[in-house]
Length: 203
Image (cartoon, helix red, strand yellow):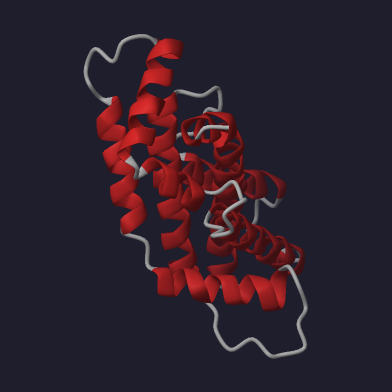
């Protein structure tokens, strides 16, 4: 398989996981907004919602780490980057997209490649390392050694934003059938809040 073909073959899987990651984080953020309000005696839902909020947040941790996996045989934004930064891979990919989608009349495809590379190079790898430490010791596995590093909600939000921007750039370049867009996190956040407001109108 050529390096360009790797990107074409696996982009939809990446974009699907990115979509689910955005949904998970948006839901966790929306639930967090509800839990941040002062509790009321009638709020019998708070414990159950706190469990859902934590689980949604941890799913977004797993999905961010999956999408930034450095393993060479993995399908990730990192393995796409290491292929896409090569000029010959860019040329082969652009030729393949033109065959599939037609001529790039507005010359936007090269700009989407440049955007993807720029976003990737802005990643805070120290933050990624702490997220991976959390995922490996306390989420995907239960290790004997204690967890010594973690991330907070704001940092996780930053990482979700980064992978979402990478997904946007890849989707704009390839025009796959996965309907990824920039507003999934915000939509998921508001959907969750509306759903709970209708279920518990006195919250």
